[in-house]
Image 1 (cartoon, rainbow, N blue to C red):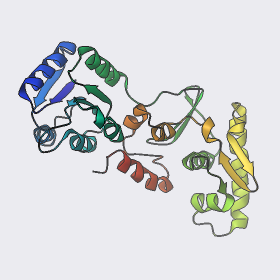
Image 2 (image 1 turned 180 degrees about the horizontal axis):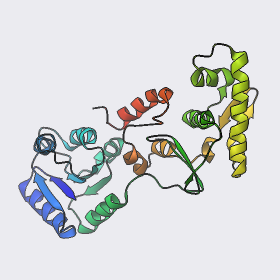
Image 3 (image 1 turned 120 degrees about the vertical axis):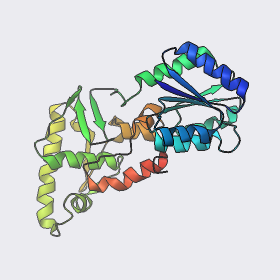
Length: 269
């Protein structure tokens, strides 16, 4: 494990580095007195840290600006702010940093953050049914991929989750799934088959109520869906850090939202 420590005060930098080495004696701990020096180590030497403990108030580029650039260069790095100023907490979490420690650096808090790094990854399902939207869209039932009779049945489900519970008309779905089809008389029977197949697939696992049908519209019960995307929107830090820039990557219609998520997470800098 490679750990960066940043503080513009030499005495504090030395003390914090020593504390971290005591907690993680096998880690490579590198100290930097300013953000530019740390970024140079990444760009010039290819040294991407696993965890970064950074002060916020530093001359030149401060810790908040550093966090934004670090997310772009090393998206898997776990960023922990170490500061004497609690008022920066809101801005820190807007930037999706992983932790926030008030000075002086406490060994137990360091240990907690390093243990979090070791266990971080894709969000774990909270129940039997889990939808993975980051990367390629996948559906898991009791830890195993859920099989669909038709490829576009799965795409219809992805679209409904993408809509976050908003209802879709037949015309809206057809325009996305069959952009080349201009005749709705042909598209509607295809859509009915997909909806029928999707409802049957979900009913077989006892989740038929996940779908809502009314007045020619279809939607999904958002509050019954467990997925990394919704967790990210709700501020779950594990989900935020699991996002690697791809969202429902097999579907071209999802790219605009992927770009919005990259902007939100600072990965388009």
